[in-house]
Image (cartoon, rainbow, N blue to C red; front, side):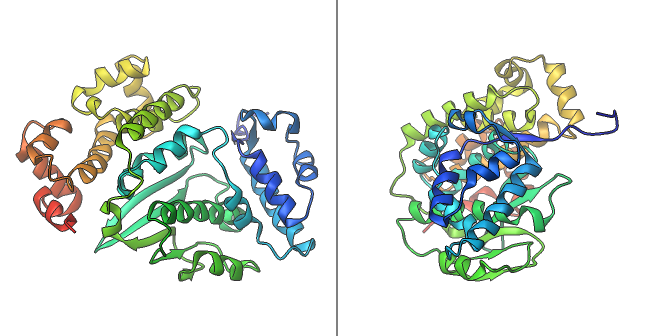
Amino acid sequence: MRASEKPAVRIPFRTAASWLRAAAVCQFDVVGIFQKEGVDVSGLHSGETTIERTALQRIFLSCIEQAQLAGSGQHFPLVLADFYSFEHLSDLEAFIMSCETLRGLSPVMAWLSALGDPDIHFLFGEHAGQARLIQTQDHEDAHPEQTWPSTEATFVLFVKFIRLLLGGRRLDARLTFRHQPHPGQAACQAFFQMPIEYGAEVDALWFEARLLDEPLRSGFPALNQKAAKQVAQRVAAIPDAASLVGKIETLLYADPDLLPQGLPALAAELGLAVRTVQRRLQEAGESHSAILGRVRLVMAERWLPDTNISIEEISRRLGFADRSSFTQAFTRWRGQTPSQFRNASKP
């Protein structure tokens, strides 16, 4: 490999059984496709197999083509996502299913990047009463005509779990996709049952922001906290090639007590020197304060709707010197005070 060339990016491939089941329903042989792309099929059951990102994109497109040629009438990304199971990530599934609100899913967005493709990011956002779950891809292979199958499958999973957490009721929402319409769009419409815009500027699920703080019947705080710590341990064990930013966000979400303790305590949890953390964050174009700000906002939005926790206590938990400092920061982030946000979150 020449010095100017970048090594191929490899990402975890933990869902072999899901691919096999989906291919069986769509009536084609996926093992032959894996072998053609050089996937070590003998190790697929272990959950430790990795695959080149571009190879996975080609496999996805080949599966769609083979499903169409087989005349199964199935749209492969939908079938794959419907069969998806957390074969080697049961702690992550436990965390998702025990969340008390949809806003509580925010840590999952960082974990998905850390445990999967570090160049694919997910983020909750809010504006003018609308919530947005957005996916962005920061790599040179992120062309919609190549990535659209995995994007659709990802949003099928998001919608599937959100509907499940909401008790199975219809989700009043809309979707925007960067890719263009395709032969499977009728099947997508039948599954999503919401307006879908193709050729948009962003891949995102849009819905009413009030749903973020609606109590979920499956909420189980003790299990949620335990699962969060287990996922955090899994992320922390990822080799150093993984995103340090993702590791830090994961630790802070899983153990909010670290928020007021500063960089030395965080570095100790990571098993790194403070200067090492600072240097590696600088190399990644990040800083401890920037990460802290993002996590503080997420945690503030999680805690403020709970009127049993005073705003002073939330300020303390987040590591602010006093309520006034927290109010100034939150107003800068959200354009409203913590009290205004709390009042707007009331049913």
